Length: 75
Image 1 (tube, helix red, strand yellow):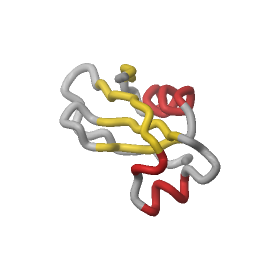
Image 2 (cartoon, rainbow, N blue to C red):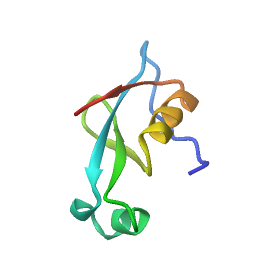
Image 3 (tube, rainbow, N blue to C red):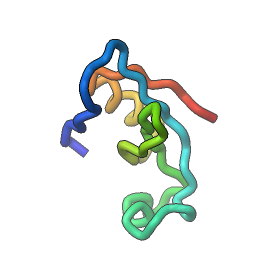
Image 4 (spheres, rainbow, N blue to C red):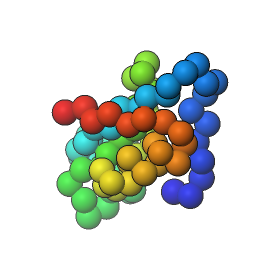
């Protein structure tokens, strides 16, 4: 999880959306990441593309900040 993600070309303020995702609804790769957890947190671009999965909400917001993006919570 130490790899920076290219969020695309800058067009002003970059916003990503953070939402909880049930581990049971993920493909095998996501289930492997979430072993022992009920849910992970997904970061999504404005167009809905999933950019990353992380283990907790704090990490999702930290990842957004590290990539110069503003994170907004989606319920």
